[in-house]
Length: 462
Image (cartoon, rainbow, N blue to C red; front, side, top):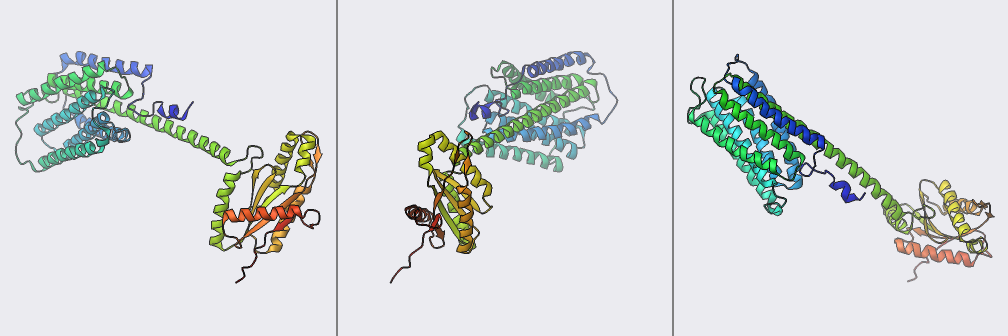
């Protein structure tokens, strides 16, 4: 599985495909909503005892709508999707309007008008989402998305500010929408009729939309619930009727349900994306390890050495400490290769790397340049005598016989060239001078008393 396919699978709410069970569930709920409308319609005008249940349901509905709006707005901003943005504005604005209705309105007439405003915002947002999501191609240029977001949020904020100002100050009276307890007045019927027509158009388009996603099928459920809400509200005709209570209960169930569904998918998508990020991080670490490791010995390779040397030079400059670069070359490696073959030579290099790695201290770093050449970087010493002790330890470890996996025992020695910082301050110069000292050590192999040679910086003469 490729990285792109990992990230593309149901990676957002817009493209997430519903399962068969989820599709059947949404259809069943839609059918139940319309059956509820049919069953309740004959009893919609029956009076019900006065209760505060409507206000309780309104509070839950406001919370669910605002939370759903925030989740959808997050997805819209990530995807730069106008359809989801329009729907998120509808949920956010609708939730705030219901909140205003609870906190700022104290008379029934104004409450009914505010509910009509809520219905209008919700219907327009569903219709906008439906039209914008029907086609695969985005109807507007993506590069201007943020401009549209600013305008959209600005308009909604202005409308909500005007509404809050009106509800607090009441500068003028709205046309009467209720007569005593009867709200089947002309303004109410016109408002409900227009909303019912627009929502019916949106519902038909949603049902016929060939691109079935999680968001489209559950928006269809919400549209069905709002349709039933409007129908039962009109059929109830008066306050505290079965039609009014069931319409609001039906609306609450739908709004809470869509909140639960979107929240579930949002969490699932975030968890899937986190799992993919962890997978990619691990894959990236494996690739980095391969890129910076020698495949034969598992030691750091030349690229890793260059990076580490630059880092340690910077640290040595900051701490004003010493640093030694030691180039190691095996003296008898070619005879081993010629006598026993390259496979044995590889076994020897692997065994040597494993042995040296086991005796390295915290401030020592070993890398393989290639062939039988290694580089050891040593920090944390001040005196040359200390460096000599370290090099004697390394040389003795190399000189110990190796019993390889093929039951062959070999013994090799090493020639080592050393260059020091701060005598030499540049990384490439340190490597070059250590290499030069190595070849001097190899040339003096017959007469030398130790396997390493230190490159001495000659004093400049004036």
